[in-house]
Length: 313
Image: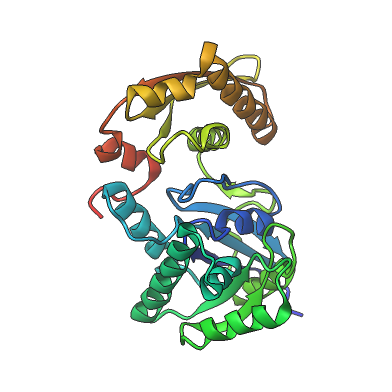
């Protein structure tokens, strides 16, 4: 067994809601990406750092690949493909339940879109000359013969060089995938300290945690177009942090939803975000939230640059 260290990048791509963020969090062993019921939650590539033996795997949780309709969508899809093209290994995560629902004729609109987006990924991989690892996800409760049927159909597309069947949520098969990714990493020094689990600036992490709580609380009522920006992040002499954030929405009616009756919804979002930030950052956070109506935030260069996205994609 070689004592040489390895380090490299593994991009996780797939349709929105395939479970990419859940898989990255599972591989890392701690939370680095937000997870909500809302599709297209991940808006920019998030790097999680996973250790396996002498290998350091920098996992790139990419935005979902889907048919873009607006500038933000185009930038997100471009970021996903850039992450894949620059990686040492690519994992294409596929929701097996959506695939089976379409086959069996009882698919929801989200299922059909997910399968269409997965086919877009396959064509994109072939066009780019990339061979990915196929990871068939959400296998718990699905009969083995059906799993094998879906896996073979996808594998025969010619976009993959190996396949795994996993449950990102429960962990089934994930250790085998992690071992394989570790073996694929090139030899070289580790890129991050051994105990570091993510490469996300604290200001951006704070914004993402609050956005997660926002969608967890009002995901049915609030459209996709909401944005959280950390406007101030100040360390205090007592070791705590004062964080000020603005939640941008596009209409007055959306502001009312976020604030809630008597401010109770905004209070819940702030408390939930503050509690998680205390735990993740390891120090006390004093969080102050504001809600602002800004109809065109998703069309302004500054918002893209803050997320590390290409405004001109």
